[in-house]
Amino acid sequence: MVIKILKNFFKRIFSNIFKSKGEIKLGFYGPPNAGKTSLANRVCKDFTGEEIGKVSKIPHETRTVQFKEKVEIDYKGKKMVFKMVDTPGIATRIDYEDFLKYKVKRKAAKKRAKEATQGVIESIKWLDDMDIVVVVLDATENPYNQVNITIIGNLVAKKIPVLVVANKIDLKKADLKKIESAFPEYDAIGISAKYGTNLEEFYESIFKLSKKI
Image (cartoon, rainbow, N blue to C red):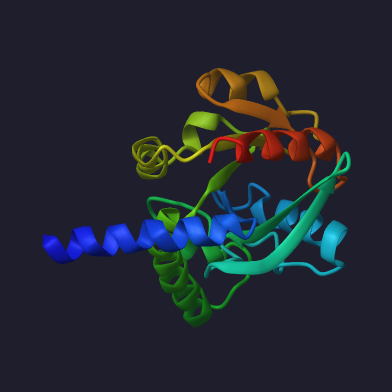
């Protein structure tokens, strides 16, 4: 018990040291194929010229936490430095048969499913290190089918500032109001990571949340 208290104490100290240097840990969370990596890629490419990870139509393309250090975002004359953390898609059940639909061979599908399951566990552990979390949802899908209770519970318990992003508003089925009604306690904005639509509001919201940490 004493050891645990000391660990948490030093963790807070080191966390404050890093924050004082201006680097804010920004985590992208959400279900598979909602557009987490697409959004992280666009932000990183806009300000560093490099992407953070690979995007694919196959679910769980991102199966390990990937990050990019020192991403300096310049918005309306203000600059902030972020550590961008892109996490694997959160799902309560990952079946290798889901990958077979995309013509992935059985052996590879089983490997992907195992890696994706480990990725979910890793993502939840990384919540302890986040300063701000962006929950990316697919605006064309039912928000209640995309929400993971464990993640939301952790965010509330840890009092981590949250921005809900409804991605894919460029599609006809997109419904931002459904996302907003599902998360009345958080700010929710609609974007298109694919086309860069409404990124100005995204940056404004992130800078606003950074004042809460």
